[in-house]
Length: 340
Image (tube, rainbow, N blue to C red; front, side, top):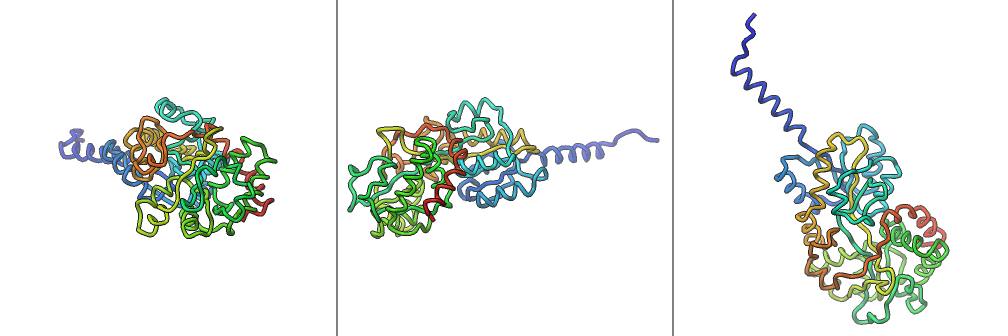
């Protein structure tokens, strides 16, 4: 029997081995962020590392249900989603695992990470007050708590209680003021609503612009995006100003977009590399400039639009994992006070 390996067979074997190795250089990402807001970053990551990112996008709740349904068979390595409440829900469902990585813990402040290091922030947004330049003076505004003042009766616009951003805002009030006072606040806001909650945060800005209400509560990046969109959105945004509440106290409420490492991730090493990239300077600059969010790294400048609102501002340093911990109680409060 001839035991010699011909050059052609050797080349074929090396080619197959190389192909197998390259095929394993991938990572699977489930993202609640729209493809346009994440794909350019992922393409850059692939160019720099050779690791292919298989992207699946969808609504936050849809992705959570999908992960639960797939269980141990999920191909996902990373869940990227908006709001600490959604990340905490994934943790509570047992979908995530602890991330032990010094690069990540050094880059992301402790209050922007899960207490068990199962998820961490990639960018920051604040839930603020926007007000009519014509009908409201900044001197009339102060805190979230003050918005229950009868002077704001039928003057406030805000979206539905089913929205996770509002749930997290109320959760922060529970953490700071207790359940009873938080419920009183929610009841007061309902009494001061100019209309039944409808639409997204951009719709609230438009409602202020056309005079349906005088103030609204929105996430900051919506204002940034509106200021560079089509003429109608730019016109609406130009008629309101941004106010950061509680600057004399605990600071304005902040929330995050963030990511967690899936339990049993099949490409764990590559997943960690992607997370390290997403908290790196290049990705942080992208978040700041492309979507007008606040970077988790203080050394990264914000966009010109965001800077014009006033930066830096005093941020609430409540650990954002508290938002998820109080989510269930927040939802119960909304139901009790009739916040639709």
